Amino acid sequence: MTPKHFAPTTGFVARYWASCNTPPVAARYLKAPFHPIRPKVVHSCAQRDPNTLWWRVSTTKITTTKRVVRSWCARRVRLAFEQALKQHGLDKLGKPLVSESPLQNNILKGTLEIYIHPPCVTEDFESIQKGANVVVSGLLAHGSTQTSTQTVNGPQPKVRRQRKVSGKVDGSS
Image 1: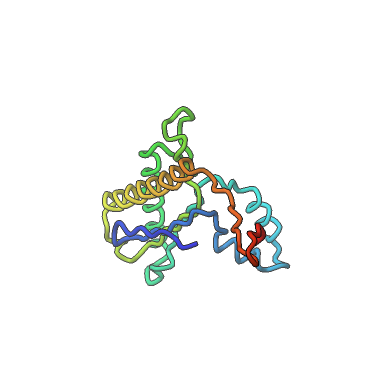
Image 2: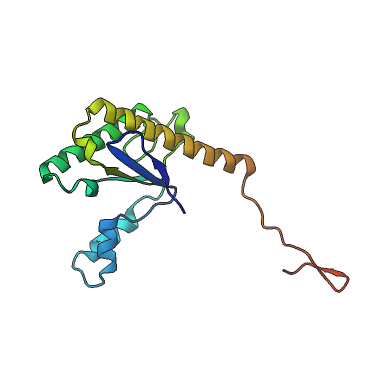
């Protein structure tokens, strides 16, 4: 499945998958069969709810800066994204804040990875927040189109093809 890309600002790029993917750090420990913390990672991955939004902020694109700058940028983007979710009536996991909310059908599911780029260091917080709002709006629009097509059309039954075998119609495929 190909990811959906969002690049609302030069400071970061977001990639979204409709399915929940294992985070890279967890995948590293899952691949090592004898690592001491592997059982804990296996347990935590098994306990994660696949009906929520799994999102993370990555600073791998700004490795030339100091660690304190990278964590500051990640914290700003994380805060902007959390505020954008809250403005759209969702909590940090992409679920509606109020159970009676009209957004009950717009639960965000899947994996969102936000990659920070070097211009994020000099960008002001308002532009980062606008970009986060664009991403959340795009995710909600993407999710609502998926749910609306699924609810309108419903699950499509498999249709068996009929083929002609020596003048007869055969129902096997």
